[in-house]
Length: 454
Image (cartoon, rainbow, N blue to C red):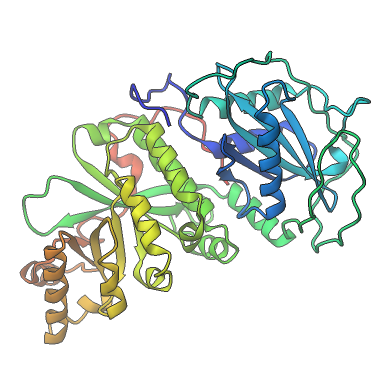
């Protein structure tokens, strides 16, 4: 991403790829879109409206970028995916007419109409605006192409009377006939199941709010204020309640990283619009990661893009990983931890237990905080083994340059014991109950469009 003057409300927009996807969907209505994805100029995924992409879609992106590499090529390309689905690819260019990325729309083949010459008709104004928004979020290319095309493009027209909906089961691949427009055909792939489609729509509609809970220091001398970011429901039925059912369903269906992206976008958007929160006092916010995000190879790249575009101070955004999950993904965690460390994002190990596997996680790069599992501290006042265990973790963390945090310790007596045992912080509802993130701002929050849900 480009670096330079700090972000302001009048500068180029904050990276909000999800908003672009929603604009693309709205621009091609009433046709139903199966998926929208945004890609950089190398074909890497920047944002997915669905949980994953198959080989057919990846091949379509590769073919589109190869065609778009020619400045004289058409800015819109259609690739037949089979199974009555087509990929419509749109080339994104910057002010110098250099390609900076592409948008791919997966839709029903019946709603993609071409003229007698086999070319797509002129792009609709709404779709053109969405493409321009995406282009403005991409970094400028070092050098423009040798020859630049004019901005005029042929519009895309959709058939209104052809309903498009995914097939609940994969249809058998039919033999593909040569495309009159010269578009290549690739193997068919089953569409998103209706159950996932409904869940995705429900997640997109679900109103959310961000709360924060401060980690209270047990000793003096710490000037950095540390907060954990908590996801809360904004619905009328259960306002300010943790949306456990929504999170569970999202993770089970591979959509957890979409919620993580939404939390990151909301948090960074708030901090960008309220610099007084972090300019006067050093702060740090930790975000819990779902298992899906740890598996998502494009998630870290999205985090990097958001941080680079926002120009927030390094180390302000940290990420929490449940220790049990990290142990299960022991083969993946070094890669994730190293990538976050390169972005200067500290790593927090939550619910740390006294096992050999958990101790091995302390070798991961970027680990700065260890949150003790509540069962370790529950009996510390009467059980000498618990006291010894806490002392052992505290000493190990100090040698490694890490802080320790105790959770669910609300009584003054418990906090005195933790202080004596050397624990650095407590996360306590009695000392610092969760509060809306807006409570950190000393100025009213400016009216701004709500960030579209995933």
